Image (cartoon, rainbow, N blue to C red; front, side, top):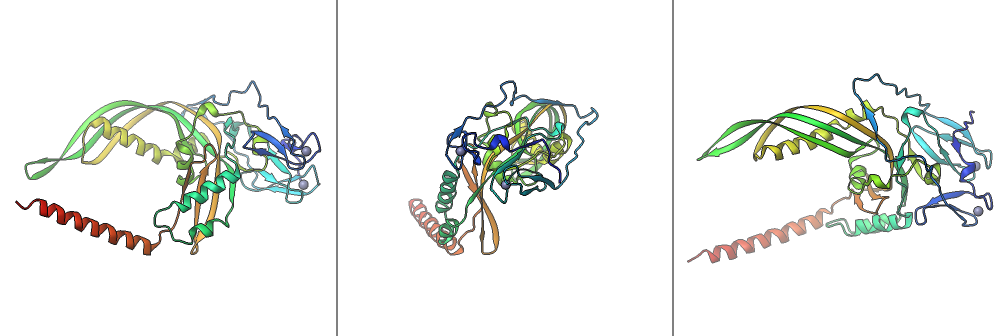
Length: 349
Ligand SMILES: [Zn+2]
Ligand SMILES: [Zn+2]
């Protein structure tokens, strides 16, 4: 068993009663579970959590991942064995429920900034249930099913990427001349850039989780990494090299570039886009962002609802009631038939 000095635990105990504390999103403090004392969290005033790192693809890589999969620790409070599995950096002691957070990582994978939870578990629970209730054509028993499920809070790893792109492109598009349509092509060049493109830094960050957080990210809200913000929440460490991060997100970036090229070309009926881009000025951040996740199962199918930990915006997966869908479809088609009839009637002179 190794006991590393990099584990934050004593700092997470109550200075009043030595009880276990957790981060409270409602007050932004480390709050004691036993005596309810609120401890202010004071991040390193010299840290600049919004600072970006430069990346040159041709420079030799200095990132040397040395991640042991399972790390064993001994709980300071009760002496129990705590295992951190995989890329987890925040756990609760299974014996005394105390918070244990890893605070120093492999230097080259350091988390530079994070945004702490602003939404409480109760608010997230309500949002997730509201979301399900408001779903059009959801099965009627879904609300009751969800009310038994609990949200879990997790800090998920993200990248932000900046880059400048100098693009030479060719678009092929269909053009109608008379009754015939021809395929034409147009070549052009353009310059564009990305600023704080938010990208997943782990295969566990599914598109649903990413989209749930995507629209609310504000780099000004970043704070320095502090173990106290993680107390009581799950968290995943960063473990991708910058090169891996860029490669994993290449498809998403290509889609954005494609859309910008189409807009720049001014053409519609596009059939194909090809381009070469010269990417320079890559800058990045490794950050953690908060999400509440509610897992549920519907007829054997695993689904989840995500509530953004920044502002409570909620997205999810849900089943459809085939009966309700058929009913709506029938109503819609009879409405359409009605409009058709009126339209037909108005056109009779
Ligand atoms: Zn206390
Ligand atoms: Zn313990």
